[in-house]
Length: 419
Image 1: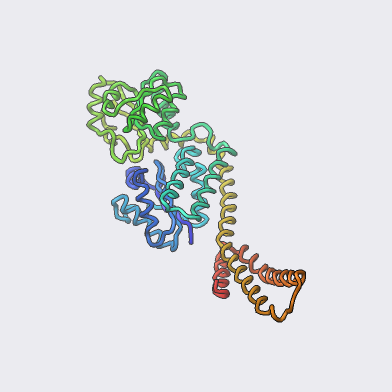
Image 2: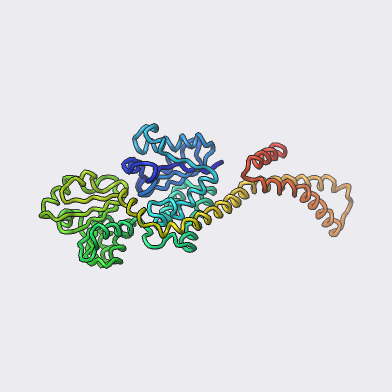
């Protein structure tokens, strides 16, 4: 049984393809049951964010599991596999562990060290548990990954300064507008991303923050908590006519603002420019709106370029985090391999002890009447003989666990002792 991760991220595919394989919260339960129900997969976790869609599985057969996940992504995107298969990255066993630990530590993010990914890894794992798609193997892996992510952020400076997509979006907006002071700003979306942008704006000293969301109650709640103003979706165009900046990061699967919507809005602004920063995946704003006079439309590709230019300080921490990840991978492998052979070793000892007890019972009549002290001595003697006989095979099996030699030894023990 192997852990395998198959995925696409912001570095391997263009944004329009990444959008097509995004699994939002509403579709996640069906996706998990779909993946784990396939022939060669026994456990699964689906991690889908604005930067990546990755499927972590416990594979009965590597090539079979790869085909299962590739076909799942094909059906999800409504694309034949040959149109995206070359963009897939695949890691298994230690490489898969290393990849997940790097993701949790923020090393694989568009914004190096960003904090949001750790919560997203936790949520993906918890949702898999809720749906019964995650078992003991992936539970051990993801629990360890969260420990690595926490260590990276508490023991190094990887998360200093701009450490999330939402704060990077606000910083990029500040740079484009030469400051946000006195600006009127509308945030579309009151979920995790939207709230992150709102809080970053308030922290930057912005006084006029307006919040629109598909669920009116969430808009009101967030606005009340930060001193902003809630805007109904029906009033979105009116709000857009007044603001200087639109920040959007909803979880919608379809466009929230079409080209025609923004064309009508720009017609009411009397030549005043509008900056739009769309960090949703899939995108909230029709990309063709960038062609409208007065509209500057930035998306995740622009954010990555902006973040890349400002990450020099955090990149100095990357070496320390990579060393930490390497240590944690080694520790995880030791724990995981010990867990793999533990049931086999336990079965071997149980079988040997059963033989010992059966032989004692068979010879009990020949031993005569033993007093308690003599019976205890015979018991201790036979237990000691069994323990000494099994000591070297046990140590050898534990030491070779996780290697081809360990697999051969384990198979031999199963065959020889019918375990």
